[in-house]
Image 1 (cartoon, rainbow, N blue to C red):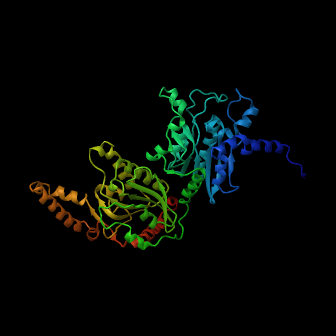
Image 2: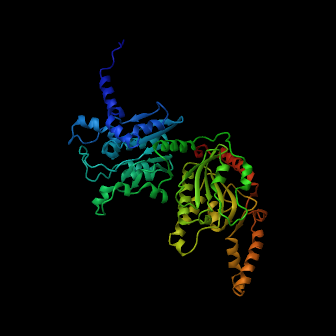
Length: 508
């Protein structure tokens, strides 16, 4: 028989638990809030469903008892600067980890590493999508309780890297994120960052220690540079927006919905200019095809000649890749090839069908292009498309020329499950005028310049008729030519059937 007397250890437990909360450090939290920042626990609480967070290792402290009082460590180093556990987001099981910058600048302690090792193993065993807030200064010197020489035998980096293709991983970066913290961010599938983020393989102290000069933290890997070079996938306004973006991206992993609402599809008939040499913004085409407010643009500041996005089409989560003619006429550069290959790899890992919207003159060519390693990067894009096991559907909007168009379609017009074109589209082994000039080079060289250009214009117009989408369909080089207003319906029907037929383990 029991009485109502509480367990004798409960008061101590409650006291110790309080010391792990933000309420136990009001001055630090207030100073952090004054900078417009949120704490690790506030970000986690905002991300996960209320009451769902199951925390691991909240009571560990920094391994510094040989040099600091235990009482001080309990108060000043709660959770050894890393908060983590399992939870649900929108009812879906997940894991979340966050370095705590208010504990020794979010540095990675040896006990903290043991915690991240443990949690990453749990992630693998439970198959949990994971969000990791990675702000922090890298490895922490001064953990004296654990005998160390190199501290290179920690498991977290390899364990986290091994999760590629096993579970989706999203990193969120605010403030300073250097060294080991940056590697964890870099190994994730996607990186969401705020404008105040600095992301680098070393912070100021390590750079100075290597004799490479003295730099302020703000000078090292600022967000503006990391967006332009493709390191950051999504730049958002602040931490609240980063949490919302992480939640939104995770929603693409949810099962296919029955239906989705879209704009009036007849608008697609007028979104392209009549002059096929005139550039147009392809993003309104993507937004028109997608469910309302379902598009998330990725790497928008990198390789602008190609756009990549996550979206839903009639409730089906997809990855969208599209040529952007407002930049370099939509030619595929080395950077665009890298962007495409990375994105196709993401869609493969996350089991997302791919919709490819083609409007390209092909790969960028010439000596300058080759100096960027174009052959290597372009070939990587081709390989990524060819290796897709998720459904791929291609739509040739306007120009589908050369190897670049083939790369957009997984290597061939018949590689996708369905390849269709809009009525004014043209296909060819290269740009139409270029094909004329190449095939008629000897004859054209013998002509006076004025006559030559007139002849090129005439032959190009004749070739345009031969290269029309309808003629390509007549030869069965593509599957169909469609009214632009039909595109969404045809995409949704094909993808829904493909997703329904896929083995369960390959579905999002």
